[in-house]
Each structure stands twice: as structure tokens, then as C-alpha cells.
Length: 358
Image (cartoon, rainbow, N blue to C red; front, side):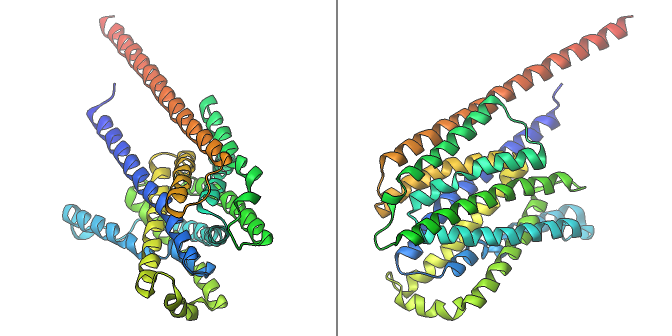
């Protein structure tokens, strides 16, 4: 029988899952839009935009400091400053380096492709995530989750048929195709990163609290930012920032506003993604990202006047269909498990009663 403590724990996990889905939604929709705005209004530094994707990592210190202060009030001077172990630190740092590379691949795609196109290409990461999740964390699939993966991947694949007609004005074919290919590579790489994070959680020989999740996220983003900092130094991006700000079409002040909000929104994306993995799974995180990319596609059409061709309409419909399929399957699976658990509890109670009456 489910205890009060179990119900409280379930409610807490559900609340944290929903909260992280909201945070992920803000970052997943806002990040690509504002990154594209940077390039549309005169920005051109790809390493710099890659750096911005994780550059707001110090913001993570705010909830970590609040959590530490709360623990101090309940545990006193014996409170641990941090929970991350050397092994977890090394794993998070390694994931961060790959994340930095993924940021560069993605930023190149955003620079060369319309938001709506790059968003739907990134949706292919769901298929890659499913494959790597099966290999790394033995993810179990149902008919509904497989159907969702196929539909969401098909939705992104439809774009390839109309890719050439979607090329922005002034963009040569070579750069457009390179942007297309690198965006797909970014999707593949992130499809590997998500299950790897889940694997790190599973192999950690300690309780995975949200504080620990934020500590891992902090190390990942710091490592990714360090990787991109090296790229910026080699490409001499630091020297070009002030000049680029002066030449920005929206003005110098708005240039820095765009830069700051780019960093903040992308930090929301990463914090939300690792939170969903913690309280759900890497596959759920990938499904949410894939569906939200369809929303980003529509927002790109609304805010930047991008073409909404028939391929994008079909892609959006397939993505929404896949989303409904996944969560309907998850609902049915959850309902079935509850019924089984209830039957087992009843049987256990009957067996106990019979034992007492003998």
C-alpha cells in the first residue's frame, strides 16, 4: 500500500519535473530566436555565440547558494559545502567539452539557416537520443514511444526535401549545405550527451538530489565555456566584440542586451534539460526538446517573417502527433503499473490475513 511519504515524494518529483519542463521550454524557444537575432542584425562571431550558450554558468551559483543556506539552518555547521565527487566532476567536465563542441556546431547552423529550419533539424536528435539511450542506459521502449520517435524524426526529415528553397537571401549554396550538415551533427552529438548524463546519474554511488544535479550542470557549463574560450582566443573574437557592438544594426546598447539575454536563455535550456533527465529520463528530455522545436519553428515565422512552406506544415503536424503519442503511451503505462501494484498489494494483504487466521 502506498504510504503518505510515497505520495509526498511522488508529488515532489512531479512538481520538479513540471518546473524543469517550464524552464526547458523558456530556454528551448527563446535561445534559438535570440541567437538568430544576433546574426540577422550584424553579428558574425560563431565562437562568441557558442561561448554565450553556456557562458551564464555563474548564475547556477544563485540556487546553489540558496540551497546551502537552507541546509545550514537545518544541519548547522556540519553542512557539506558541495556534494559532487571527483569522479562525478571528471565525468561532468568531459561532457562539458563535448557540449562546447556541440555548441559550436549548432551556432554555425543558426548563423547559416533560418530558425525554423535549424529548429526542425535539431529535432532529429530524438532518434539519436533513443538509440544511445538504448545502448547506454537500457532504455525500455513501448509501441507508443517508438511511434513517437518515428513521427518526430520523419517530421524533421521532411525538411530535407525543400531545403534548397529555404536558403536565406545572400547565402551561397556551399555555406547553406555546410550549415545543414553541421546542424545535423550537432543533433547527433547532443543525442549522445543526454543519455550520457543519465548514465552518470545512474552510476553515481550517492543520492541524486537537485543540488547535485545543479553542481554537475555547473561543471559541465564551465568546461564547455572554457572550450569555447580557447576557440575565441584563437579566432580573436575578444578583440572584435567592441567593434561588432558599434556596428550592430540595433545599436551598441541593444547589442549587449541581446548578448546578455542569449546567455541567460540558453542557461535556462541546460538547467531545464538536466532537471528533466533527473526527474524523468533522457528520452523524455529529448521528446520535450523535439516538440518545443516545432514551437520555435512557428515563432521564427512570426517574428522573422520566414517562409512557412508546406514541408514545415507537415513537419509540425508530425511532431505534434508524435508528442501526443508519447504522452498517451506514458499515461497508459503509468495507469497499468498502478493497477498491477494495487492488485499485488491486495493479494499481499489477503495472504497476510489468511496467515493470521490459521
